[in-house]
Length: 586
Image (cartoon, rainbow, N blue to C red):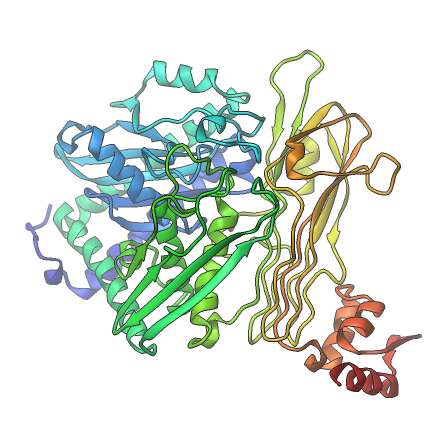
């Protein structure tokens, strides 16, 4: 090993950059290993997982950011671990599991963190960690995420930090308890094994890096990395006009609050190089699962800052150090235990939109219409033998709102959600269901000078008995447009659409029984548009019609563009278009 280094400023810039790239490569290698060894479709296909390397105090040195919220979850999990297990007791080969939203840092109970201490020469260097969503950990419904949950005890088994491996050997009692509390024990333990392998790989790679450069040099360079990130953020924020800027956004689902939307409000103070986020005016905690914990709110702040400063900023502790976040106990952003939190993602995305709404006054890059949320829920398929159900857990996507300088993105996760849509081939090969429809919904993107992203619809034909467990209900309103842009479309979950047996699933339905031959339609919401639709260039409207994004009727109704079919497709009726646009404008 090289000479002892105690001051991060003594590490030369080239070494810092080499170690930065090395740490980035390590977390990406961990991530690839996790995706390749995942048992469940939610890890393998949806990629609902993140990996990170942290220092001995739980500060993130590098994270492969699939899910931005995990930037807040990882340190909170490590903090909880160190409260229960002093650093001097941790040994190489140990691994700890934690999924408790209150006595740990998990976003919700299905997100299980696996944390492995990196011990070099008997001294704790840091932690190799991963967080991955589990297909089922008990609770009221298959998939563990119920819109009917009224407390976290309805959401499945919860573990504060407990030892899952002791010096390389699985703790049988913990493994047995986890298996006994899951409807999909093989998937849960299989995915946990993949996490054990990924974190062990990360620990090994960090040990190799320390052997090459020296543990103290790597530690000093890691500190230098996040301090540089903090400096870059503060330098950028210092260029923004000082002042206090307010914004808000709302959850559109009916949830369990008697049809009342949940509103998140933020006051952003810019003072020199400091950005402070005050969330205390947000609504109180709710009875349903639309609540989120403070470490994740802080991660939302970091996400928004990264978007507005430089999307290529490394995801490390520097993003956290550069912001201040204040929440109010008893609010939907800092609920009292045992408030449920399983549907935290809509609140997280709404918090991000509240920040962009606030800063749109001073930053052109923050000007974006509301994005849409996926219509969440879980399909469970029942075996005739009466054994465990097969849990079909997908990450639904919505669409991204139009920006001040461009159209939104269709059929995409928005903001802090991320993840991917499970391919049809995987769904049909692993579950007794047939996908009969998967397409974009024309006219679902909010009209505007820039069009909102389009929603998509999926229809599933059941090949056996099952049930759908809803996490959200009917949409009360659509994602809003900005600066004259119009809302996107409202989504819905419908059983047997267009038949006498048609039933729209609401939040009060909770779970809905399905039979062989039933069709379940899940239509997502479209995103809002930006700017007056009558100012959208006619040629762009024509292109949208030719692409199937906008119908001929929609072009006339929403954009004032009259089209006539001809041999080449469509031509613009210039006279009628001028009349329409003048009339609507007047």
